[in-house]
Length: 365
Ligand SMILES: [Fe+2]
Image 1: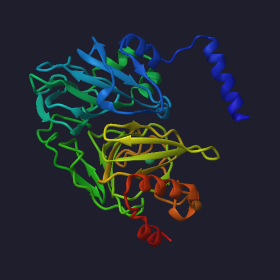
Image 2: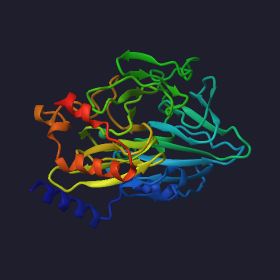
Image 3: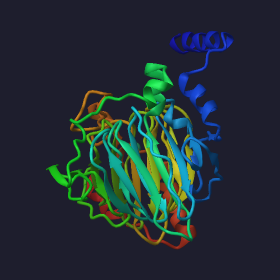
């Protein structure tokens, strides 16, 4: 019943020609917007001139983001800078390739600049000015940003407000000298509060047993955002437990080779193969599960529009490390569909990799 009503409402909206403010914004931006379920390799997406920003770019509105958040990929030409900008949405920026620097300032405040390179992660504080520079004269820089622009633009339905609001959020960033020095505060186990990570591909991670497979994981919060991130790594010959949560967690594979399966409860599973550079977004409440099928540990970065521990309350907190049998959102190894284990073993067999799951299943049962 409920879905029929939703379909009728959506149809009524379309008949009226209603577009969301975010859709209108994309039309004004003039760069292409890609949809789809996942991106094979973020290093090789085609970009187009982007006049507002002063570089080249593309927007990504992948299905699993469900209108909550988006990504863009942006290129800075060799030796060039992008235009200064500020906005009322949050952005987590991952450096896909190249080296450079970003200058950050509040209106009337002093500027500070920090350098970054391939693998860096940072976030310009909300509504602070920032400008990116390419530090090399012979190579472009490629950045990927995950933002909550769709939510914020549609909430206020006023593009001018979102890009031209003068309020300074000094509670988020008041020009502190050490803000981008990369030294993390550690408010709890497995949790770093930091505003700059030099290289997420080599950042040291603590052990995290409850998510399976002898993996390592670190939760990250930056720039007093409501958005958050985590880095996860799991060993050769292993796979993680299936779990589910809200829309918009953008998973970027940093190292390794393997595949993921995703499914909506009651539906058939979908499978996606990945390698370093792949990007995927599990849709709202779809179970998903990651498998390392290659010869090295697999590591990924997840950029999420939710799960801030410093500023909770934006969205439901998910029980991602508690069994579905106890009301949580994780499927324990002993409860999974036997086809899952068979699929993993078949893939390892093809590649000549030995499964390391034996002791992990035993420890879990
Ligand atoms: Fe997830």
